[in-house]
Length: 256
Image (cartoon, rainbow, N blue to C red; front, side, top):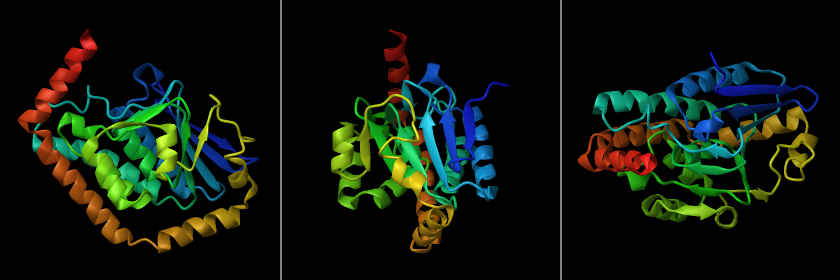
């Protein structure tokens, strides 16, 4: 079985690099990828050596969102809820990892890819990439809990505006609204990059303490409830005529 997710543990820097590895699909999230990512995140929850986790994608994209071959429109509400719940569980596990997480967004991100990024504590974006919570264009809402997490990452009014508009934005725009903490130009992930260097320099005890402090200051029970409600709402929209038509039109455009 091919590895749709790669895990590299750098013991010198006490850093784990998790790479989505479906470059031919712009690292779109399939059910197989979810299963592998879930196993890796579980492993990192048990890891007592790692102080930092970085999530990135195989070039040339970060993550194009859910793979519509798996998350297509021709399913019922109950099945949609079941499928969406799988990735929600992964996002929840990423959010609650005991060490800080960085989304190193090395290229394009859409839809579910942005939800994945929202589960990370910090985000850095490639200057040439474009990024969008585009779920609204498919007549659905965010469905993995990432919309809920977006409200925690940027000003709620800005999050609300972005989700409704479902537009695509530049790296500079993401930095301006605080979704991204920095912008980079390099294609490869480098530990000596100025944006990463501060995290590498901090000790295991420091980084684990600050993540614990952040989690303690969250109402995690309510956050989980809000994410659950998001999945429920999206599963109802999934069976709408508007969504089915939007998905059909998406496949038609990509056949041309």
